[in-house]
Length: 429
Image 1: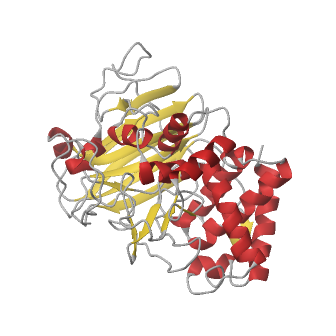
Image 2 (image 1 turned 45 degrees about the horizontal axis):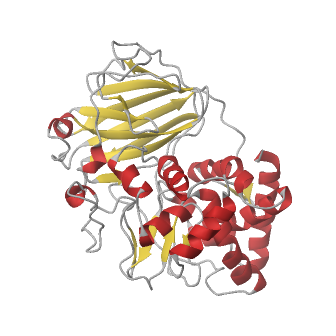
Image 3 (image 1 turned 135 degrees about the vertical axis):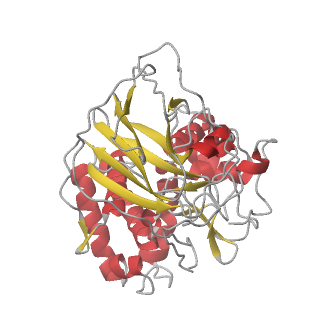
């Protein structure tokens, strides 16, 4: 994927690292975009997983003891390498992702792992084709390398142990967080690591990443008679637990607003992209997924960001900062930006995490809106007024699968909203 001419250069380190369209459908996962107006643009699709349970026994190594400091080699892969955003992991049971480096554009695949509190997680990366040596790197929320492919480092908040998968083509690690954490996983090759993340991988390189979470898979969720797929369900459950409680208003108002915005995200396909928390879709035109520190070149072009699918275009930084302080009156804007970065899998002390936290102008605006509750509060008024008070043409139809499933008509969309309200009433704390 070519670089956007407007890619922000936040110091010399970004001359290489910021370029490739980080959230592009990329590699073997396919994606698309819906052309629509108003509060619009859309997402793509990603690979899914299957149910199961964790069971591999961890084998502690010399780097697995708690504090005082890591003995692992510290890596910041996406500071130099072009990183592709791979499917998010975090559903209970077993998920298996099969991927390739066939595009030749990326040396690293980055996965967001949403690790529940107290749940054991087995991760195994297995080479399935090509001549290369697989390496799995794991970051905690601070961006500390807690597993460097050989050694592991545990803290009071995160237990980390190397695994022995029993195959020369596989590497593995066991994780257990004492509180919920959003971790970053990097699938790459030994030659890429040895080169300081400047080398690439052969285009015939293929692998399978298996994630087994030792928690019981819940009953499936259904919206308008459509059973949500694995990605959609993962994100609807995430919204219920981690967005709805923080949207301003009474409990009933929080659920109401969140249901309308979640409907929008579902029908736009935002909940089908690999990591909706870092989602950034610019109508250049045509629609194009852009990287985490890229901005839409023309301020007048539609620019949809984050879990809510809210428009970053047509807004001012001042208005978004004001809204952010209303949503989180006890927090600083810097804290909100750091939270957005960390939640999306960009560790606080990584180059990307620091760039997001310290961003300004339109990039800052976009990342405040990628903080879930802020994006939902910003998106509710246009969604409700344009789609349910009025009936704008971009709100309904059958022109793409997600809209056909959740929004063929206004009446059917209201059924989707009602089902989402019922889900949130059950799942939201």
